Image (cartoon, rainbow, N blue to C red; front, top):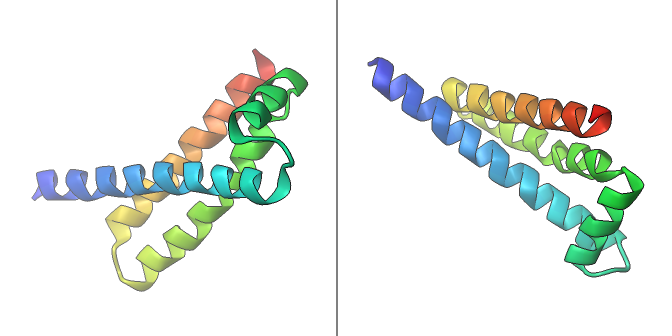
Length: 96
């Protein structure tokens, strides 16, 4: 039983990471006038990469509520963990 729960949390975590990356890509695609790679380089140089990742994490909100509506609570926990991992990554990039 515990293996099944852990598996569901890992699946939710991976889906949360994919949603975050997809959100970042969609934000860059719609709001940047530069190509994807160049936008990431410019964001790193200007120190706004964390802001792009935070905006990409907004897509996790939709995924989280979809899992809650479908009563997939452990997958929703995984998405929440992915969001927390993104927040920790943002903190690390801001201060180091």
